[in-house]
Length: 418
Image 1 (cartoon, rainbow, N blue to C red):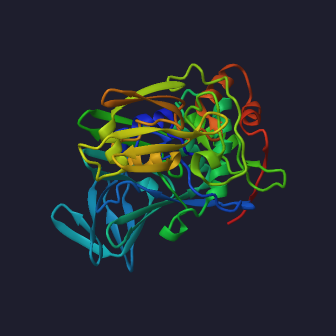
Image 2 (spheres, rainbow, N blue to C red; image 1 turned 135 degrees about the horizontal axis):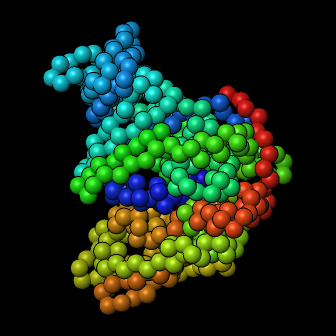
Image 3 (cartoon, rainbow, N blue to C red; image 1 turned 90 degrees about the vertical axis):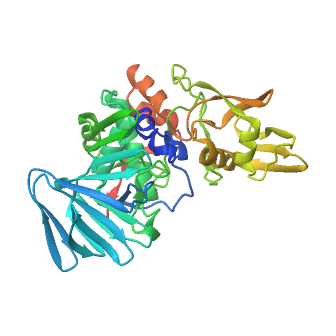
């Protein structure tokens, strides 16, 4: 966040799914920066259901037949009927009930004609998209790619990241940041056959409608009117550097009073600096406290930790702005220094992404436990979502908001290319 940064709504929606992975931008939208693109692509290929790596996908036709285009043939799915797409060693096959209907290595369909469903561990997810859906059999799973106009993707991300009643100016600011991010990072997953993924590794892209079911209940949402409006109102606008190249823009849920540079957050080495933020103080993530068993935390960092090892985990270095740069970990006779971004990644993978919510925190020993007290939620880079909402409610425009968080950038039109 660009995307990154799970939104409050994205966090809620993905909470269960990211215990297969995470609750908000929290494998945040980070990673290496690609060279700034001179043009804005017309369409984006979005990898969807990327966290699932599904072997089975269900398609349900809407009120008209859905034409599934396979290699050399067309299979028509009748209105309101469902078929199952299965991954096999030789490609993909289509089943209706117990009847094998067709086989191929790839199929495409108008995404608006079907509802997609994937079942994961204790989770069932349905989504609807516009554009074109392609399903390809890879070596171990099915790959799903939705191709949509850029501004349809921008609207979907804004809708996933902000509530439907979000102030217009905050939504406009986010739309421009999202467009800047996708223009700058397009092709990040080119080696995998798509441009960006639908998780907060790139952008939280849930499509036009989504439903998640699990034991605890059912949640869902749909593309908001505000998100569609702001994507249209800001069409073609991106953040730019002084030389008119596209600015590498990010966003996070709550900066906790201070943003930082990608270099600090990700080790990406980008020349951007942070700003002080007084607008997110009312956020429930402005301050946070978590507690974890120190031996459990040590095992997340070093799996062979013994039950008899003495364990000490403490902050080793901080930046001048108070962000944790590295941690000193002593486990028995072993001593290692772990960069903070690596620490957060390991802990997130092993213990869940809502334990170390940000990069500004202290660690306090408490018996067999460690208490973490921190500020903010996400990677702290770029636009603070909670801060932008507060600014918009105070009457500030989206231009004001963007100048506040991106003082080195300007808003300008981007030429449409590919």
